[in-house]
Image 1 (cartoon, rainbow, N blue to C red):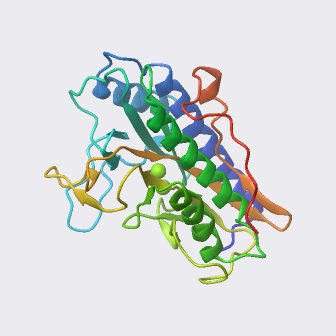
Image 2: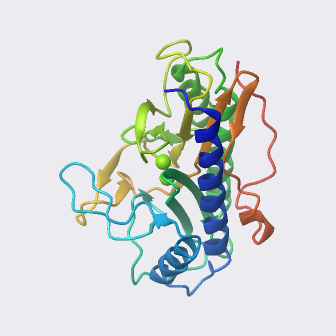
Length: 271
Ligand code: MG
Ligand code: MG
C-alpha cells in the first residue's frame, strides 16, 4: 500500500516521537535499574506529547493483552519481554521495543542496549544485527522485491554463524501498527512482492548468537532463543521513495547519550 505525502509526514512525526522515547529510556539504563522503572519513564514521556503507548493493551491471536508500554527483552529473550521486577546486571543485553500512536499514525522502533561492559561476543552480535538492519534498508528500493530485503539480512548474519529468527517478521506500518506486507528477515533474491514507491514498513532483524529457533515463555508473550543464546533486535521505520529508502526513525537521539553497543561498521550495500 502506497502512502500519500500527508500520511508520510504524519508517520515521520510518530517515528520522531518513538526515537525520542527510546533515547529518554536509554538515559536510565544502568546496572541496578529495574526494568519496570524504564516502562514508567517511557509511558510518561509518550503521554506528555498527547500520544498513546501503542503496545499497551495490544492483542495478538490467543494471547492476553500486552500489559506494558515497552517490550523489554534481556539476554536470551528475543522480543516481547515484560518489564517487571528484574534488575539490570552488568553485561546484560537489553532489547527495548517501543510503539506510539500520534495523530492516528503509528511509530515503532527497537534498539538493543548494553548494560555496563559487554562481552566480545555480545558486541559482535549487536554489530552484526545493526549491520543487517542497514543492509535490509539499503535493499529497500523500488527496483527490488521483499525477498531481496530478507536475503540481504539473512546472508550477512548467517555468514557470521548467527541465527536469523524466522517466527517473527517486520511489517507495514501506517494507521495500523502491523499492516501488510510482512517483511521476513530471510528470503531469496528476486522473490516475493515487488517493493512499491510510497510503501512504509518496519525492518527489524532479530538475531541470535546460536540457533534461529525460539520458544514462547510460560508468561505467554516472551519469545526466547531455544538454546539460551543471547539475542539482539534493531528496528527502523522506512519509507520507499523513487530515489531510494528514507529512514523515518533515528538512533541519533539515543546515541547522544550512550555509546552504541556495536562497533563502528562499514557496510557494502546489497544489490
Ligand atoms: Mg517494534
Ligand atoms: Mg515492529
